Image 1 (cartoon, helix red, strand yellow):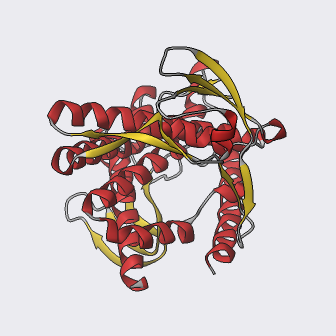
Image 2 (tube, rainbow, N blue to C red):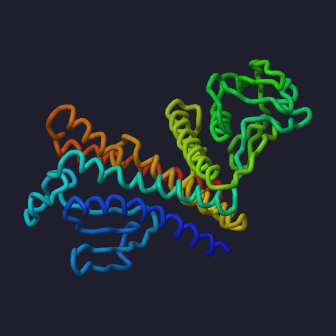
Image 3 (cartoon, one colour):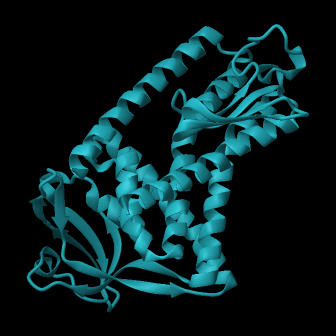
Length: 350
């Protein structure tokens, strides 16, 4: 069973990476940038094919994480054999921006399509920030929250969906107290403080228990499925933004992050849930990949876009050596983070 789960994970990551890199590739080709290689995966090449007309090397590499499109002149003119017009760095500013953001755009489009068609075919369930039932003697019950109460905000942050609420409840709060802005069934609005029960598992991760079940809503039909796709997309992106904020402010621990091993565990648990859930998982991971890549951090697509924006503001390119050093440092830090998260996942998993 573990082997099947591993193959499914590799397939999912392969699809997401292929879609992302194809975005860079197709726009670079449309703008006549010289392309050396289109690769899925990292490390040693296990399969290669050279295009007869375009002479591009199409490769599959051994490690099924990541991928890249190798283009001439990504930062500066780096190949004397290539026509200067074919260097990416010599293309108009707007074309370079499109090439860089195309991968993220493809990931987002893939996610929207999967969310839409999954809801259209099988239906979808929306979790609402409304109380369906409160567990007896739980922190929520003791605080005075009852069934049919609507959660408007948590710690002063507006809540329009349960995805946002879940992230806010993961964040550390002063004195472990969470202030819920509640709208009661009679229309009265009240701020209620809740102190969750905290327990620590064998893996050392703390779990907070509030004791509440929330309402859900079923989605069917073309228009509702379309609306669901965009609203779910928006809530996932917002949740990711809150997560990044929480990591920088220290309100969310690095222990909350997962790498390839953690993703394997999720896939392993999800296989039995059916095709619709797997499609949702692909959409979720695709949004994650797109969101992370557009962050203005060196080595990410967003970091390269940031340098182009700086170039536009100052009226001249950023020193190529400085940019390359920044990307190398960024890549090194990402590798360290990935190693840390992977080791953390391994100890948690085993």
